[in-house]
Image (cartoon, rainbow, N blue to C red; front, side, top):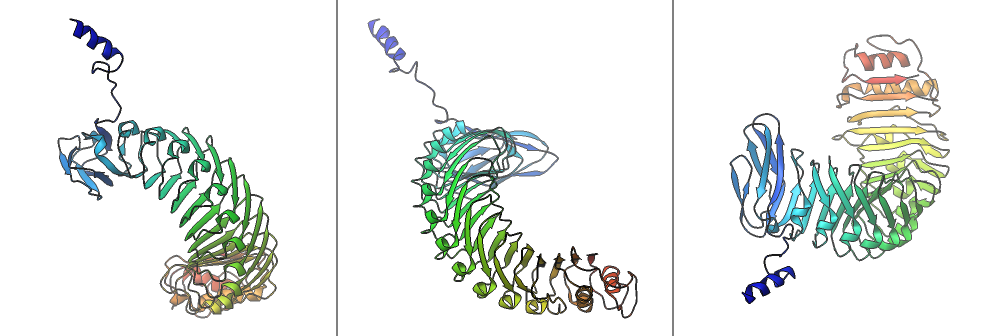
Length: 478
């Protein structure tokens, strides 16, 4: 009898088994729901890696044996539509999880509290409850959570401060969640890939590049974020060597960005777009040793910009965009770019500068990719020449707006396209030549076999009434 009494009191104090707490996720099951509509629908678990072998129950009487350390996808075909519960008996066995099938949902990270997950990649699923507090004991190398459809989300970087991820991504999450993200919690990290983008309002975001100065990321994105405290200086990043660096569409913050801090970089993708008022000093001379495949400088409000195509003549970009910039020193000549082979080239809505653009310089540009040529500049000090389109067989979209072209120049563009019309390979090409450009001459009518006015060339490009034509164009003129 005394022993029983002693055991009773010990159990109250937590030393016995009667009052032992049940720890969520410790040996419990991991479950998902699969909701299918119609018959013979395939559901995919993109990755489910275990630390041993286990049996996955698909909820319709079917099972699959998951082998240890298999990082491939697991699929199942449901014969009829419905909602099924997918179950793995022991959640602690999971070390890698990737979900991206919108037919899946119902994940609750509370089931994974005692798991040791090193790879977590979840996107586009529904009805889930995801809390960073459930993950605080993890040490993931990869953690990506983005574009979730519905669910309950409580994400705080404070829960992640002991992590050392190589890839971290939080992007495009739904409203109604609680998001508290501070770069101070990440200062000891050394990620190679970091994304924070397109988050909803209502979160608390405190991001300073000073916290990241010891990082050496190869990919860094910060864009389309709601109001928060952002302090970004390129001087904190001067020792970085990113392959991809994107900073764009921010609403608020303090930004001090100078291309001189980046001169030793060799990025393949660089983007500075639609930023709020700040201190921006961008010179193409700092970038002359770069060899980017994609380069964007667009829609900046303030700053000092010195951009010369002669500095970048050795580049071979597939995408190059310079558009909607404030007053600066711009010297752009297509002759500097004649050895390029871009798929997309934009020069749009630029202020006064020296622009010498000739389609003959572009005649050797891409023959296998869709080619977009945009030239739309406010002031052209050297006359644009768009008359020779020979070789531009993949031309898709040519926009000439607000170039102050004369009627003779507009006619020459239309005649040049009409002459080369049979060589173009894109099925739905577009031409826009309007704004401050003059209207083409003549009457919009057919005149085969040899149109002789601007509007007659435009008519035949659209309607292909004359022989020897190619694909029909969509043409917009004054």
